[in-house]
Image (cartoon, rainbow, N blue to C red; front, side, top):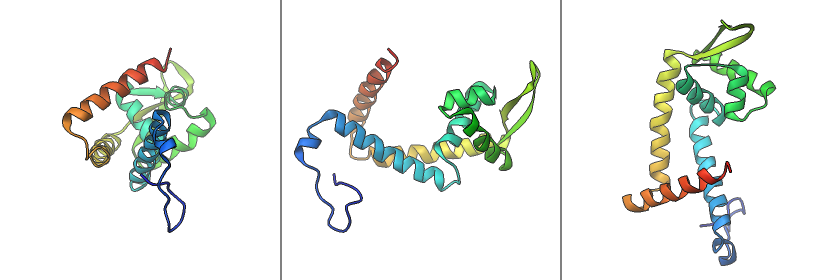
Length: 154
């Protein structure tokens, strides 16, 4: 693995860094995010847009505040994210039947189709990232990462 962004003569990372599990997790995570964000950008979207689509697919309907919390975006910044999705016909806003001061956001048929497309593209990204691992190694990696992820909320 090489340090990114160091110009023409890329420098190999020191063994002291690659010997650290935390460093490797951070480095692989950063590279995975970069590749994932580039794939989404190819569709004119960001990870926040994808998150909103995923949450709506799961919940069916959500308020803008629910979406901002679920995706981890400041509520003020959620409005332009939802605006873009609405402009592209991927979501629609409607008055919230329980509170007319709020808007409920729902996924459209075009949003569902786009989400299906993004899931396939995401699977390809994951496949490329994990290409050098056997099926058994992938299963082990997933199991270990799931276990670590579970402990994060403690």
